[in-house]
Structure formats: C-alpha cells, structure tokens
Image (tube, rainbow, N blue to C red; front, side, top):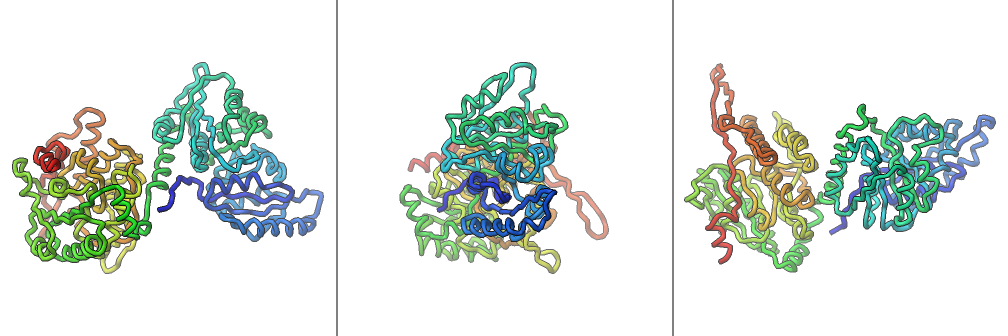
Length: 596
C-alpha cells in the first residue's frame, strides 16, 4: 500500500545554462515535480561567432548526461547555441508543454539575457523563480497571499513539496482595498488540515513577511498580479523578499490571463481545483494495489471488521449465476475476505432467484421487507433495505449485470476502506465499452454521467468534480456512515449517497478505485432519459436542503416521454418521483436487529 501525495506539478523544465550553478534550481525541481526536463543553453554575445560555442556545448552535453543518471531527470539531446537563448527556450517549452518552468534567480535571468519582466509579463507556462540555497528537508513553508491566481499557484507549489505544515499568511492592507480575492481561497484553506491560516493587517507586506521568514524553511509567494513595466522588477514585495529573506524563496507567476475585474470575488473561485486535484491524487486507487487478498484479510482481522456483499438484482438470469459463483468462490471460500453474500431481489419475473438459490446464498425480495412502510420500486430501495438484512461493518454493493465479473470489482472498493480508517465511502470506476451499431467504442458509455451528473456536480458540488464515475454501481461504505444517510429509492440513489457522504463527512472521506473494464448490457436512450430526470430531482432536493426553500413542485415529478409508433408521435406520461427513505438507523426494526 503505497503512500499517496498531492503532486500538481507533473513535469518541470529547467534550462542548464553554461556558466550557471544549477544545484538550487535542480533540487527545487526534483522536490516539486514527478519528471524534470533538462534543456541545454549556451548564450553567445553578438560580438562573437556562434562557432565559439562548440566547446561550451560539449561541456553542457556532458553535464546533461551526468545529471540524467539521477531519478526523475531526462534531457534533450539538442543543446541550443544561440544569441537569442530566451526565444529558443520558449520553443522548447512549447514542444514539451511542462507544468512549470524553474529559473534560478538571478543567475538564469542574467545568463539568458532577459529581465524578470521579459519572463513574467508574458510567461510561456507557469514560472517559478528560485533563490537558494534550497533546503535538503522541508518541514515548514510560508505562503504569503492576498488572493488571486498567483496565490493559488503558490499554494499548489507549497502543497507539492509535502511539508509537515504550511502557513498561509493572509495579508490585508489598511484602507478601502478590497479583500474579495482571498474569499475564494478561504473556504479551500479551511478544508486542508495541513494548512494553518494566519491573518494580519499591514501597511508594509514585505516587512511583515520578512518578520515571519526566519521561522520557516522556505517561502513560496506570487509575483505581482499586474502587468509589469519595470525591466528589473517582478513586483516590489517579491523583489524585496528575494533580496532580503534569510532562507530560500520561490516566486511564482501563472500563465493564466489576469481577470478583467481585478478585485472581483470570483478571482479565488478557481482555487477549488486545488482541493479537487489534491483529493484526486491522494484518494484515487487502482484495483491492482489490493490484489493481495490475504493482506486485506489481515487488515480486516486486525481491525475486527466484518464485511457484507449485497447484490441487487432485477431480472438478471443471464449473468447473476456467474457473478455469485465467481465472487463466492474467490472471496468467501478460498479467501475469507467476505463474511456473507446476500441477494436483494426486486421481484424478478425471470429465473434470477432460482439461480441464486442453487448457489446457496440468502435471498430477500426487497418489496417484502419492512412491509409497514409500503413497497417502492427502484434500486435505491433495494440498497436501503439491504442494510436491514446484512450484518457487516462494511457493506459492498455490486451490480449483477456484469458480463466480465472478476473479484477486483469487490476487493478494489474494499481496499481503501481497510487501508485507511478515515475513508467512509469508495466508488468504483472503469472503462465501459459501448456497442454502437456493429462497432465497439472502448471509451464509450456513461452517457448520463457526462450529460447530466457531471455538469450538475461541477455546477453545484464542484468539490465532487474529480469523481470519475459518480453513477457507478460498484461501491462500498462503512455501515456506521451508511445507516445515518437517507436513500433515494430510484435511479438517483448513487447521486444522493455521494452528495450526502460529502456533506456529512467531507471530501477526504470519499475515495475511488480504477476497476479496469466493465462490460454490461447498455440501456435504451429512453431509460437513460428517465434516469437523468431522477438525478435532476435529487440534486434539486439537496439544493433545497442547502438553501432552506422549496424549488421542486410535485407537478414536476411526471415526465412526458415522446414515443413514435406506426408512423405517429404521441406523449406518454410517466411518474418518476424520486423520493427518499429516512436513515436506516431511525427504523425501529433495524435498531432491534442491530442490538441482537
């Protein structure tokens, strides 16, 4: 089980310029990025022929070969011998599209023959100016900020270094200057436990930063957010910090264009991507990480946990037998990872229950459970009632229409729960081959996700925008969390659970696992339309709860479906009312069973 971490900088580019010591900038690049690209540069003055650079180019190639022996580093074979080295470096950046360009301050700027303004006024990508010496170990990082895109990049860079603690020093100035740019960042900072926020009002930001600097291993800060006219300055505050700080400094500037209205509160709203990117990096797993089943059993036993697998089914006679046989043999008989497997049938009219009976597992018809509450149709109703008839501390749900069933669909979503006690809920995701005519589109499927669920989540719950397949039917959760949540009875159950887990336990309580490929029977477009209608209702209901006001009228629960038969169009009205059940812990029959 590998340690996972946030790494927003995947590739960094560092110029290896003749005449410069690259120790500081290379140490910074390796601390920040997964991969570092090295580009050799030899700057020839206008008074000398380019041919005089041949021996210098050989020296740079030697350095590149030696450096590339280290981890993360790869070099470009071509060394640029040029009178316009900055232009050549920009061409290299365009070819490789790195996340970050790192330059050592001030040596690189002088050797490249450019000013900070040349680099930062129109940066070819995100840029970091590094002033060393760069510390070998980084325990504490100071990130001064007021808000805006440079503050967001500063925070990303600080998080990528994985220090024990980051202090976000929120600087406000006395007077009428708006503090709106910081407000978008503020709600993100409160959700990052490793970030401590310190606010101070000052008329001299540079002096305030320098007063705090000795307590930290490194300062990461943004350059000025305004277009620069000075040929020597990258902003008065950053200039002074680079010159006077007792420790290492990284000054960053994003290549994103500046907002038209500089003090608009929306400047900080894109900071949500920091939270989502960090969650995605740390809480996205692969089924292969958990294929050692005996290791999972050891984790389960060490925590004294029990695990239930509930299989919802409705007319799945073609696949249900193989699903039960495969999972029972691998995860119950050969390796005791599961403690029980239960079929939750939705009153199938085919041979689903007879097939399950032959495999000797308990079978429950969900319409017959809790009869005093009335019977409802829908998968969500089956999942909710499965809590009543299972006993595991962890509950796993797997759809029974999977053609290529494999134990990974279960252990993949179980692994994160067993490995991390803070995780409450795990979603599976996969590639979904979709048959279009006579052809298979390997990356197809998920039409309701892409056309309905994902746009809605991005709009109203952007923290959940990193969930690859929010509607997947393979997921698992801790009973202690699931029993406290309401369950929508129909198509909207997955959306409702995801939103409710997020709102009750936070984004860090959710994880997702790549389950590789899933082959199943695709539904008709009309069925997908009804599913979308139900998901819309769920999101609106949750927004009603958030804002404390009714939005959806009962009349909106009937869907007018346009049908075409025998050369004629007609309307078919179908009620699709997505209602929810209360948390199972509130049901008396459930509480009785739990104490037995």
